[in-house]
Length: 553
Image: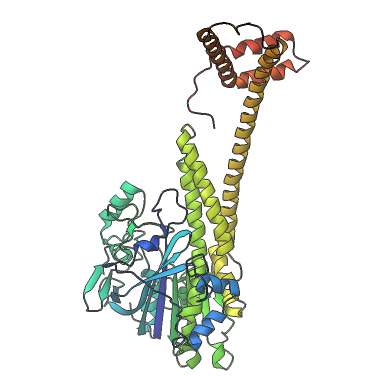
C-alpha cells in the first residue's frame, strides 16, 4: 500500500481505558483503591495537584481551562480550594490522579512488513473517582510529519486490549502487528502478544472473560486482571469491548484537500483501506447525514476566507478527532490555542463523558452480579442480596448528586460536543435504564419488608388472641383456682414451673401455627362459611406441617 501524499504535521492521540475495580473490603461501600498505590517500588505515584496550586506556575492556560466549565463541574474537577478540606468528597476534588514516568516512548508496527512508527509519550495517568469503583487509564502520545494513512491506521489499530479475531496467517485482526513500550533509557519494557492465539482461546474457555494483551497488562500493574492467575490485591475487570475510546488531534497543511472518504475514516477511526482514497469505507445509505450526525462544523467552511473556518471536529462516540491547519497559530498554540484546549478542556470533556458511561455500566454490572448470586433457599444469600442492593442504591444516589449532570459548559463548542458525545454513547438512556433497575430492586426490598412486617403483626395478633383467652379465664377465677398459699415451698415452685412451661408451650405452639390459626380465625368471622368448614380449618391447626425446601422469604 502506497503512503498517502497528505502529511499530518502534528499528531496527538489520547487513549482512555475505563476499567471496573473489584472490591478490596467486604461490605465496605467506599474502597479507596488508590491508597494501595504510590509506595516504594510502585511505578504509580500520585500527582499532588494536576491543576497546580503554585501561584507562580498558574498561567493563563490554567485559568482558561478552569473558567470553561460551570461551577458544579469546577468543584467536581478541581475541588473547593486551599481553604477547604481536601479529602475526596469533603471539599477536595473527588478525582485522584496517579502517574508513571518510566514509559517514555511507544514503538508500533501496524502491519507485518511495515517499518515501526515511534511516538513520544506525553504522560501515562490513572484516574480514580471517589465512591465509584472505576478507574480510567489515560495514555497521551504524539508524533510529527506522518502520512495520513498511517495516522488513520494508528487510530484504528492501536487501542485494542485484546484481539477480536485472527487472520489466516496468524496475525491478530484489527490489531497492530507489534507494540513496544520503551523506557527513558531506550530499553523495551513490554511487548504485545496479540499473535498468541492459543493463550487467548484458552483463557476465554476457562474464565469466560477476555485475556488482556501483555503490554496493556504491564501498563496497569500492580493492578491485575481479575480473572488472571496473577496475585495482586488491586484487581480490575474489562467494562466494555476491546476497543479503547480515543481522542486525536491532527494538523495538516491544507485540510481542504481531504476527500469525504478521508473524513469518514477519521470520524469513525476506521482503517485506511487498500484502494483509492476516494472509495468510501461504508455503504452510501449508511453515510447519509454523516456531516449532520458526526461532524461539528462550527468553525469549518472551506469555501469561505479566513483561518477560523478551517477547523473541524468529528465525534462518533468511541472517538473524537480534531483537524485543522498547521499554519494557523491559533490552532497549533499549545497554551491557549486549539492544541492546548484539546489537551486540557476537550480531554476533560472526554474524561467526564466516558466516566459517566463507565460508572453506569459498573452499577448495572453490580446489579446483575447481585441477582445472579441470589439463592432464595439460603437465608445468608438473601441477606447478602438485600445488603448488596441497598449498597448499590446508595452509591447510585451519590453518583447522581455528585457526578451526574447534563450541562458541562456554557461555551458553545464544549456544550454542543458534550451533548453530541453523550448522545452517541447513549448515556442518558443508560442512566434511565440503571435508575429503573435500581428503583425496581428498591421497590422489591420495600415490598418484601412490608410483607415480612405484616406477617409479624399477624403472628403477634394470633398470639395475643390465644393469650387473651387464658388471661380472661384466670382473671374470671380471681387467680384462686388452686388454694396453695399454705403448701410447702417446693410444691408451689413445682406448680409454678409447670404452669410456666405450659404457658410457654402454648405461646410457642401459637407462634408455630399462627398462619393456620389466622386462617381459622378469619374463617370463624366469616358468616357465610358453614360450621363444618370452620371445624375443618380448626383440625388443620393440629396437623403436622409438611417439610418445604428453604426458608420463607
